Image (cartoon, rainbow, N blue to C red; front, side, top):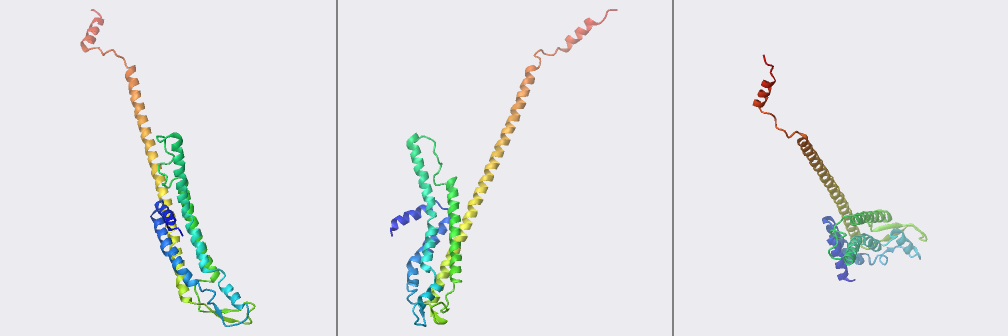
Length: 272
């Protein structure tokens, strides 16, 4: 395994994730991938070899083992970890696509041109929907595998004694599992970490939708205040224009004085 390449991918995923996403990534890498790589093969390495039944009937051992363990836990968890971790790299690939598009745009129109994206790593537009899709996909994958494991093995318990009646066994035979307690503890640990990851992804979805709703409300309030300010300024300008028109049509001749009015009245008085 190329650890340098894996470190680069994980650092990219961590860079473009929220706080909940960083906690999710830490749990997946430390408590699921590392534990799986270090301990899973040792716990389930002797799965079929140490599964024994108290009969010498040919084929009975294999049939009983296939009945109680239709799919290996190790392979099932390997598929789960692959399907859970791969969607996170879609965000890194989307950001890389944005950066490449921005680079080509600047090469075509020059460095002083308007940018296509204010911030290529900011979760806006298509990148936001990509991030939401990865969260929904991870929740669906973890929930499906948790239910699938419960459905295939009828729970998460490993009884030390199993009763098998499958053909070609001659009768009901007793079969025994190696290290059932250790396998039970390991299975419960993997299931609990899967449920914790599901809860973290749900919280991250709620955080993203809540943040987007707050931003939409803030933008609507801002546009409403701008529209109100524009209307107020428009009414003020109309009032000033009406005052100017009134002053324009008013006569410029000053009002006559009191003495002039009295003299004019004396002249018009009839003589006795």
